[in-house]
Length: 316
Ligand code: MG
Image (cartoon, rainbow, N blue to C red; front, side, top):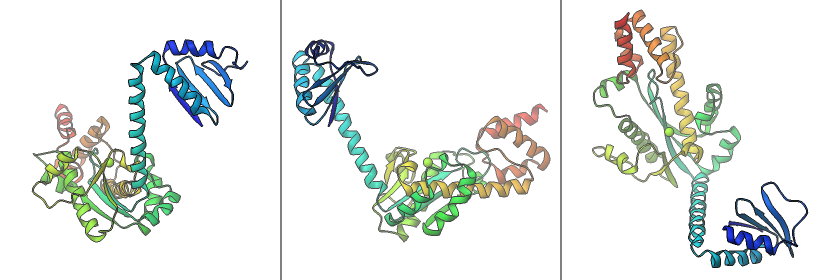
């Protein structure tokens, strides 16, 4: 048993005095002393952290906890708060592991930060029986995997994992979102689409998880006028906490890369991802070679890059 907590200066002094004759000859790094009290090993650190180890650690720890409370009635509060936080963390871990090992539908998107290429949103349905298979494959947040790994793993994932994927092509994006651009609204609409499709086909899920990109109330507000799937568990960093979201993120990435490749082949050049200054340079070159009309087919025109590219061409 190991128990540790922090004590104030005055308790520290009492402890140093008390353990004077019980000290071990060796002192661990950053410790004031390490001592034996019957079966308990007590280590006091310079920071004020004290650690009790052994079968009866709780008895000795309680004695010093009482001393700390007695000498510092206000320090009491600090300890309670940290206990509360610990409890909250514990509860969160419990819920997370419950969701991790459950049968879930999860969704994630790719391409919302890339000037070139479409937006892809995927939902995946992972039954708990398939979790070991996915763990064996090394399924994880797609951001942690390089493109070649994605290309290798996704064909194996979709052998067993049902999914629904929606691709918002560049012409569609430019037609629908040229003026009223709100990327979170677009995400909400597309996530809702794949969730409706999947939950209809697979109604027996424990959780439907969305990687949280907006507050739930905001998410549902975007969908006011559309039939909406509502029983959603929103989670931050869901790609690493829920395998269906991880699968969804990987499949989205895979489809995005395939679409991206098509554009590259069509143009005969390799394209940069993201929305950096390199993107602007390549964009300008494409317009010079193919004319401005082609941009509607391959890029998201509402991005600031479009203005920057136009200005670059004006300066020439
Ligand atoms: Mg995400």
